[in-house]
Image (cartoon, rainbow, N blue to C red; front, side, top):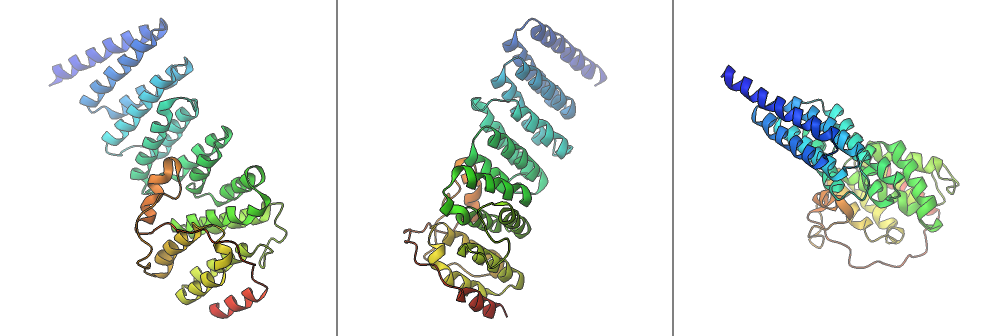
Length: 332
């Protein structure tokens, strides 16, 4: 047994020597193959930590020498090793390292998206966050925003569980990418999506940060000039007191304004199930991808059993100041 182990180590040392020679002579294709050979040997010997350290240093060396596809491939092998190791690793350390590797890959590197998705899947499995670890989403959101990929960055920031960052991020989207008439729609959609993740704390933090920092919102506390902001204010109150009747009345009262975005009804159906134990009507069936992009498949899990709205109703005239009094009565 000892002799076999020694032979295995000598074989690894020979490959390591060839690897260094390949790197030093600029033969990066051969170096990449040597890293893969070492990966299989380390895995066979269950030397998971040595394997991951080697692959990580190798990925950084390759990306430094403009070998991004090969570096991304080693990143995928790292994730594979993390999975094989039985999750007995420092999660935060490897989230930081994998994030750093992803940040060094250009958006044109085809393998980068696959690596991001694999990292998110792994981080979710080891952390208990079904849709991926929040700190990983935060790093990816910042990266994508810096590259101008606003829509994908938004998906990640919504999963970062950092309401202050999310609110500030949405303010930037509103100012740079949206019409002034959509100042309320942007935050309402985000809050409803976060509530569909049953993350009430982050949803309210996001709402508060957005309201306080958006220059076009004239009032920083209820009642707001924008009708749908008042809806969100009352929605939080309904959740806090767990009154399903008040929730139904709130949705009915604000329906004309909510109809501005046909996706809101689906979110509210899900919120009714999560927070008020309201069974969806038979009309709301079939799962749909509402988030789009690389996270569509993740978010679609949350909405299995709910159907898309078939119509986008025209915006009716907004209600008057009697809304607040009626809802307050329901909440009493």
